Image (tube, rainbow, N blue to C red):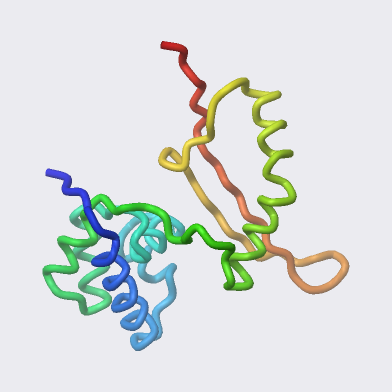
Length: 156
């Protein structure tokens, strides 16, 4: 049976413990995802408190990180999602995503609605990928793919 959280505090506390264990064991997010058998983006989000893991994945992650049975159970609970409060983010990396949406959010909305009609892009039926690629002008570029199922608005 799926259980939902009432307060995100427990998952936030578990995320802090899990990240500390990841650091102490010198693990990568990819190694943790490989143990779970799921994508690196999904597992990272789950460990950081934004998704529930299937039982086998929760056991594998907890085992790799040295977490107890309570953590296994907590990793399987449906979280209270949302990792950024209502204020403008202060972390520079997160702020840049906020800035990108401030600049391009209405453009993305206009283009999505023009091509698909009235509706939303799912963040549940969703895939995320981050790639580092060479920049032809020197240095590196980040290629971020957000791939969500389109859900049309249905009149009722």
